[in-house]
Length: 197
Image (cartoon, rainbow, N blue to C red; front, top):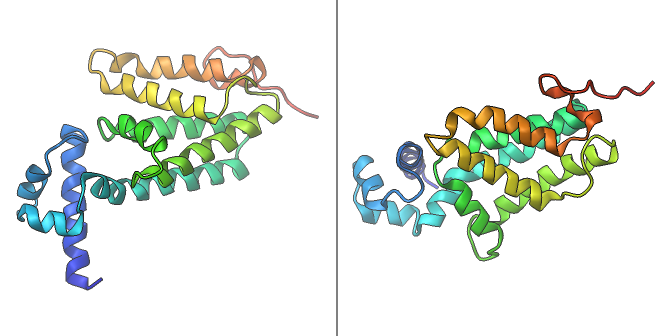
């Protein structure tokens, strides 16, 4: 890609990111083009569909979440890795209103431009969950799909103005429900994590 074309593409992505953060994923493409001071045809030349635009915009974040899971897996205890990643994932999804609805649909649709990225994120969370389960600090009756659904649920709470003040407390409630009593020391008043000696 030529330098000027890449510059134009990066500008469109920056404008689209700001617009989606403000108005949600259903913001009109024409409105994004207008904010970027280009014609709709120019936007569509770079991103022929809304999903193509969202994939380009979100893929970096998806890749970062996947990489962060790998880092946490090697640098933190199983329970801390799981809860920290879950918190980061929820925080990211609340940056873009409505993105969890798209993610839930894309993960079930192999033809979606977002499918592969969503599957990678879900698999990353599943690995952290499996590690915590193997260590005996996470309940054994949930899987990666459940964890992905819990991220979507917590992100939805953060998107609701009336419920947003409760989001942090409810995150702790959900995290406490995922962890067994041995792994719930992350929460205020929880049982200290079990130590192995």
